[in-house]
Length: 245
Image (cartoon, rainbow, N blue to C red; front, side):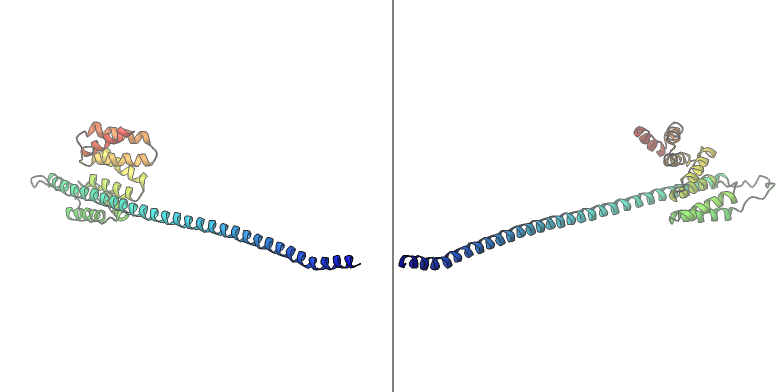
């Protein structure tokens, strides 16, 4: 009996100790599980943060590249504007010089009898022409086109008609009225083939034909410049374009 009692006493003492050890193992496992879960979440957050930083860096790089491209576009646009202005100034200067010769060539001879029908007032004619030309100088292409077209109707016998038709075509082209521009360029080259503007008119016509999808006609216009006006600056441009086609 004493032995049984002693065994029961020892068992009673051992049970709380085993229970305490069991509780500690469970707690340690739970703590380890929480720690692992925490580390996993932390790793995920760090990966996400790195991804966001990389994305932010890529966005910043794209912004810098876009700013660079915008700067280059502004430079190219300015260069194009300057080139068009130089070309316009060149033609205006050429027009002024040619008008001096044209005016001298058509000056009335006092020994000749007066014409049967009264001629247009030269002062008004010159005034209207120069007013239209000033619109070209100012870059007011829409108004310039209307002014030159009105001039051709008001002064059908004017010595300025080749210039007026050419400038009307140029202003129309700048307004992107390509079909109408082609008509006036074609009229200039066909009606006044010996005029100094004829080669440039054919070059303008070729540009219009290209934009209108008439590649065959555009090439024919370039070939006509080379064959008929081989010494003109327009012929050099035409040769270069023909070499590319």
